[in-house]
Length: 241
Image (cartoon, rainbow, N blue to C red):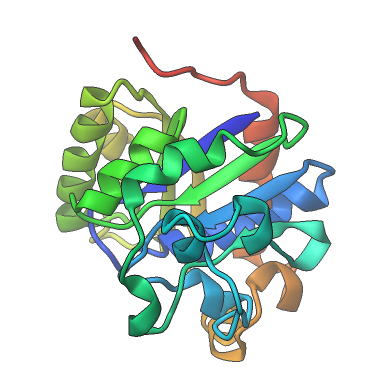
């Protein structure tokens, strides 16, 4: 079982959208996949799957009230989602540091757990990275995002996680963008995928349905599916001890 945290230095780079669609892509390729929203104070994953009114969320499991299996909801292509609570009242009482132990209860026949790690260097970010065995960096091709992504890479490595690669999102191939090769040099991480800027992403977000469902043949959906295939082919990078 592979536990991969999708991590970015800053918000607004499309990390949650990437996690949702990557999870669907992996499931569609025959891999048993769970997507976990580890952003407990600013959750968005539930909105992408219309689960904002879920009876149980991962917050309840992290509060010790129910088991992890009870917070799983089945989505497109059979992917399972562990949403975080959208209501402010439900945020209290959850302990992010329990996430690693919670995920150890997942049956080993699960192929992938995709963890949507919150941006920044918050307590819940560290908890999400500690729960993972691998990290996939997500950024957009501008200097601020890349600079913040560097901080996340350093924190991940401090925790013993070597990034398996990077997904470069919202690529427009404009002259002002930082070239992928330059980003690889700055971060010392290989670019596994370049996801093009795609109007279909915003259309999907506004419908509350993932891109893989609304426009599975769109350029961004194809690029994410290719990323899923690469992850399936690559070997797991276990944390350094």
